[in-house]
Length: 180
Image 1 (cartoon, rainbow, N blue to C red):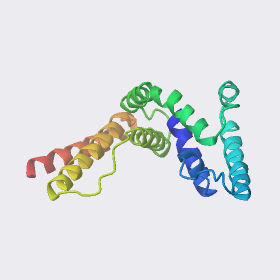
Image 2: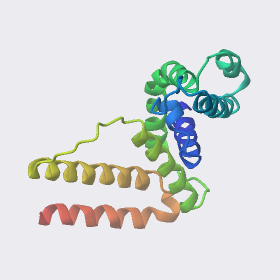
Image 3: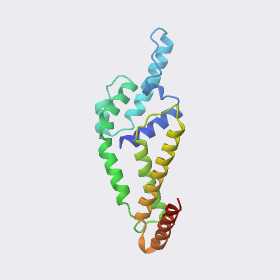
Image 4: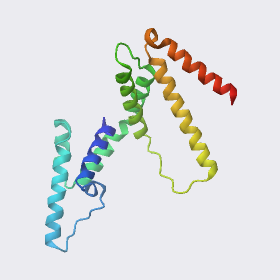
């Protein structure tokens, strides 16, 4: 589960102000021996954290990579390509999710975790200038996404307990569509 692991590590590195060692924004200073030593120390610390946050099989493949950035890039290159399979697995689990005997809260929490992981895998670019038309388009897309999530949630609810509620919500949705 590379995407969740990456998110966890980025958060941890950010709290320690060490993310620049994996992004490459913190450069080694070869002209000043004191700064070079400080960089070496921090690089080794970040590399140590990365090595200790992977399983033993992966550990052996990254142990001798020289910098934290090189380790980071290697892991990204090797494991981010499997996102397609993970996306499929998450999408399938969202559409097939059922509440069963779990509480509504537990069922929703599981669905939400899958939705958030899928969203994190999207890799959409950041846009700096948006036209009013594009803003309207993205708002409508967001509404459709939320509606789709609602349908997935309702579809998996325990019909014996929540069948009437599910029907009422769907009929309210239908009424609002007719009014629009």
